[in-house]
Length: 262
Length: 310
Image 1: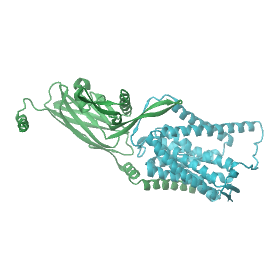
Image 2 (image 1 turned 180 degrees about the horizontal axis):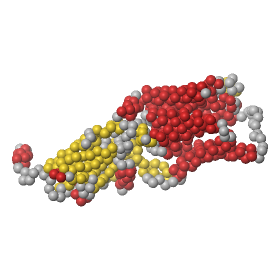
Image 3 (image 1 turned 90 degrees about the vertical axis):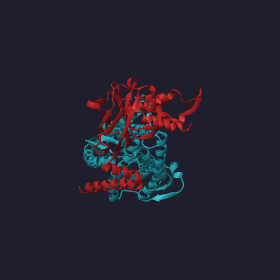
Image 4 (image 1 turned 60 degrees about the horizontal axis):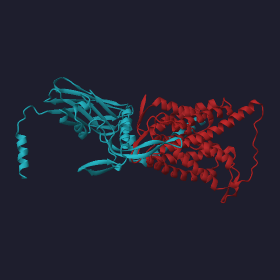
């Protein structure tokens, strides 16, 4: 019985493809984006080529930035003033998330395929592990949220806020098909782009499911004097603090010296 | 001309920052105040995260108080003994304030507490200043003379406190407890609000400690210089929230502004100056208060988990 599986796998491999196997390639115009003192956002272009494309196939590009944990609080009026309350912790939320496609996502992919790969703002996985428990209901293991429907409002708030900051985006028709199976998509990075490693996943969708995919990576980092200052502040905090004080004293003393001369 | 601030992680207009520094410097030169209590709210208004604005303004106050303290040092108008006691209290207060700042930040409540402190202090100080200056202006219009307070010193509860010592420069015989307590309070304010605290300390020194006005300003600047320096250092070392680029832009603008302000201040009468300042303080207070009460456009606040950022 155990010997059957490798034989099956061999058979599958040996089966000649009736049509050309769909294949996809992608590259970004830049592999690193540097944040310098004049950084006010950046625009990159993702180029790609697809082989074995049939009529009705779609391309989807998903760019994800470095993930971090978030705390989301709901403001509530207390004694007349708005106070942050009811914190919910979300784990591994991408700091940047942009989707571009050739058609609206709901038209090109099935719900389950989009959900499985986390494609689209509606399908992006935003998990709040502290409020969730795994339970088995009717023999199926499901995730149950302790705060029920409310967690959906928190998720919507994350997407809404990030969208206004330009950190989350979803653009149907954001992928432009060129001649000969070539395509391109514009990746817009806003001024508040977080630093870290980015991954651009490119999918070829056929009949509602992804039949081929490819990834390209991108690094966003602080460069030049900004990087030096940032590293200095975090790696040599004590020396940084002393420098900040010393510079202020120097300027204050300088001002007093100039003033005194008059 | 946009400049990216490496610690605040926002891109702001450099001209705007220099202008803001010059404007606040102008006010501080004109009115003889540190200006931190106006600078921090204004930075928050232009989009600097409060958690970075507060410690960075403390850094800027180091520079502005240093030039003032040096001038007073040369003129020998500092009560050093009193200064050291205020400083001892201030250092302890600053350490406590920085801890409190970190704790509130991890609870997600730092922005609220900063705003509340500002609304409270600016409201009280601005209101008192406004009433006082308007009364003075009206009295002057009526042709009356400004009543001089007699140096007559009544005994009060402060005289009953133990550990008395002599302060030769101020000509006082006083317990060491009030200066330490005042210093502690001001040190805590410096850490939480990013202010020097002169606007609290100067009245306290005059009305509670009854120090002669000739040494009050110098002594308070002496204390502010060291306490804000300590606050800057602690915030940088512990919370990594001091933005040197932002601080330097404000300092450069402030140095120029202070010179211009000091000249302009000589041409306007003291009562009118105080009334103008009072109106500004009250307006900032009202704006901050309104932001606390008005229904926010976004009902959710999103912040990094674990306390980094704001």
